[in-house]
Structures are given as structure tokens and as C-alpha cells.
Image (cartoon, rainbow, N blue to C red; front, side, top):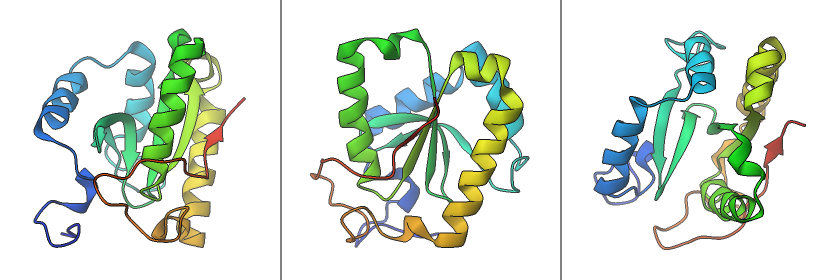
Length: 161
């Protein structure tokens, strides 16, 4: 198992505190209907043979789905994400996550509901690109994983519209 720095914390926990880890466990039992649909296609290595985690803690945020091998977060956004205050929060959150060299792909509930095949194809394409290019080995700053106190704006955000 890979560890971050000199700590014994697994690399895939990204400096998450116990409160965030406990909340993620609780949220796994409360997936939205669209998250449940997507999870059925991601679980048990069904997509590109890679393992996904649901409601995964990254620093003090929780990603809907995370693939550590591809350093990829998949977010399923409902209508609340259209609000200005929520967009600003998402932007800040994305910057923190992207500083770990993680790419974020967002899909709307409607995309999951009405265009699931295209969503799965897009996810698979991004996974193949990420692994082939090893783009996740360095963060946008080129320094690898940030220290626990870092925030900031990353690059590599992908929104499917």
C-alpha cells in the first residue's frame, strides 16, 4: 500500500480527517437515484477493469466516485449545482482536489438518466487517456501531492455539456 510522505496514512485518503471519513461512510448508504444507476456500472471493476470507490473522502471533501488508478473523480450533479453559490463552492472544491493531480468529470442527473451509454463511454475514454499519458503522476503545479494545508486552483477539470 502506498503512503503519503512520512505518515502511515494510505495515499488514497488524501489527508482526510476522521469526521470526513465517517461522513463518507454515511453517504454511501444514501446515494441519489442517479448515483445508484451509475454505481451499478462502476462497481466490481466493470468499467475498464478498474476499481471505483463511492463517496470517497479527499481532504475535507467527498467525491461521488473515485478511481485511484486513474486519479479520476466522477461527480453526479443535481439541480442544486446550478446555483451561483454552489458553483463557487464547487470551483473551490475542485481546485483542492485537482491539486492532488486528480481530474474531475461532472455529469448532470439528466445525462445519467437519458444518456447513460455516452456517459460510460466518456468515462472510459478519459480513463484510457489518463492511464496512457500518466497525467495523474504530477499535479497541475508539477509537485505531486500537496501538503495538507494547501488549497488552490488546479487544471484538468472536465465538464460534459
